[in-house]
Amino acid sequence: MSTEREMIEGCLRNDVKAQELFYHCYARKMFGVCLRFAGNPSEAEDILQDGFIRVYGNLHHFRFEGSLEGWIRRTMINTAINHYKKQLKFQQEVELNEATTLATIQEDGLSKISREELLHIIQGLPTGYRTVFNLFVIEGYTHKEIGIMLGISENTSKSQLSRARGVIQHRFKKIMK
Amino acid sequence: MEESEKIDKKFRESFTGFDPAPPEEVWEGVRRVLHPRPRYDGFWSRIGDLPQSSPRIFQLSVMISSAAVVLFLIVLWFAYSDHHSIKGHAYAGEARLCRGTAYLFKVEDKVKPFDTIQHFSSANLDEHGSYVFLNIQPGKYLLRVIPEKNSPIAKKYESSWFDQHENLNDAHLIIVGSEDQDIDIHLVPKPEK
Image (cartoon, rainbow over all chains, first blue to last red; front, top):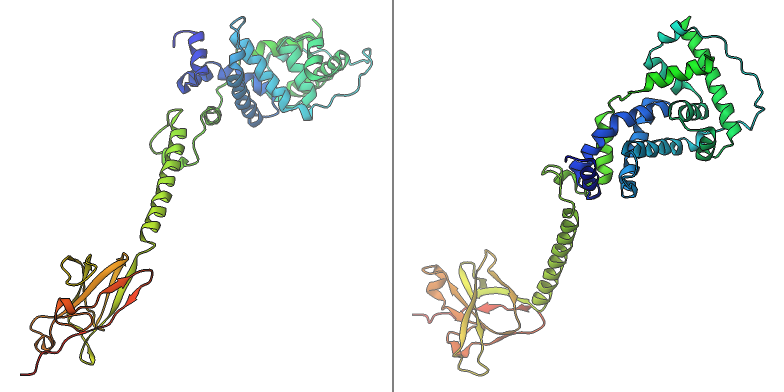
């Protein structure tokens, strides 16, 4: 199975070996995505499993026009969003000039925070904060795009992000004490 | 750098290249959805994974086999639905004959003499002197009882045809139609010396 196209064609033929190879090529990266969007590792596993099932089901739609990894990633994110759809509760739009002052975080203190601690902080965020934070900060979506994905306004997306950062900073300070 | 930028940068850098290994159960769960096992999981799991088409072929073969069995039973039932039995007791005088053999012959002749008789079945007499012939198709039959050789009864009684006749052409036909036949046969006594 030398090329990506051959692997996909094998998956479309329902060849279990091609499907397993495909899974193992992308499972680790996608699990990383799922861990950030999930509230705990168990839910991350559920999202990963559902996400790959959706990937195989929609693989015939992939047109080889962009990155396969990027296509899988978007599918995984959509699966994560659907997984938490009922739990996504966003506050009504708030004034943008609501002050959310962030105290100074020392660079050297920040560098001591491990990835595991960061993951723990993200997973501890309320679902709405966590989702917007992931989409904006790590996945690189705009607030307009996030609004469309989550069915919220841009302003709501911005306020969710602001609040997420406030919670994160508060937890940073606890860790650095 | 603004605080928010520091936080964002920290997260972006930390999660670049973040690729933890998921548990193997996740792939197993995906595989089970993509390739569901048939309900006879316990049996097939011992012989490995089936090719994609095999579950359907197996189901088809089970259906065909079941239909064949049902059809066979129906044919069997119809084949034997008109089969009956001939049973009864053998007597030597007033006593029942407990040591001997009953013979059943099928007769094709419409009138005597009986030229086309064919041995159909034999049955040993039990301790009550009774015999039984099963699965008898409708038709004409002759019944003969022979006492056990060298037995006390054999010294006093002849081998006999139903209904207590020594000669074949005197024998009475047993007509099997739509019912079982209950026939008692009496041995012909030997002349006293």
